[in-house]
Image (tube, rainbow, N blue to C red; front, side):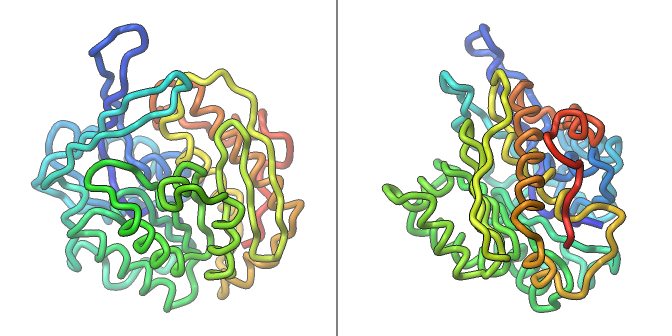
Amino acid sequence: MILVAGEALIDMIPVPGQPNRYDARLGGASFSVAIGLARLDQQVSFLGRISADVFGRQLRDQLAAAGVDTSLVAAATEPTTLSVAALDAHGKPEYGFYANGTADWQWTESSIPAVLPSSVRALYAGGLALRFPPGAAVLEELMWRVRQEGEVLIFFDPNVRGGSGFSADAERGRVERQLELAHVIKASEDDIALLYPGRHYHDIAAEWQRKTAGTVIVTLGPHGAYALTAGGAELSVPAAPVTVVDTVGAGDAFSAALLDGLLPPAMPAVPDPAAALARIDADATRRILERACVSAAYTCGQIGAQTADAPTLAALIQHAPASPRAGTV
């Protein structure tokens, strides 16, 4: 099972051709990754705080409909977070958040199980839940505990966003501290530009890889993806062709397919995920990245994160240029 921890919120997406009108879409980085993994036939459990309001009920219902286990979801009395997007000419969003006192950030130690289910093979931690207090420290502690136990692959996506009191210095410190707890780090070129203005993503990826000895992947939008692997390979893959509607949720679709490629459902758990990750060769990594790019492109061709219509395993098999799964972790 893959445990996905983080937020579930509502994305308000501009309606094309209709100024001042918005479409409410179910979203949030972690929520979208959980749905994406379930659509790829993974066994997934969502660890999050979801409101009892109308939006919260819709979020919970969508998780259940996709086959995501919700037994670790905490019922929250606070309202659901709203994310309001403004799209540029290329469909790239800029977000504003209505997040004060909302459900996603009020984590306490009692929200987290003292012992994770024995079936957990990987932990996805990312999105705003690892940034916003007071709950961010609780999730970071979960990452630390899981890393100390050493039997679960940790996948980290910093998902950096401007606004909401953003400080490059504070965010950089937070991300650099949390990435040291992960085996796989996936960031976008935009994340890196916000954290390290004026610096090239190649240099930052190399610095991160030296800190973790894991695999670092940088997504490059229309230019594909770049990776430095735990096994010592450096490679780039092109983006899959698509007519872009918007890029909301593209990174999350990429993450879901990437995790699925690293951890095929039928593969048994391994006692040392770091060592297993280092055994994945460059060719296998390339196939996994190509497939993840197809997943991201699929999402870019839709309005919003489109979690209900996330690419299925059959869709990725049809459109990916290589075998559907190539992971060995």
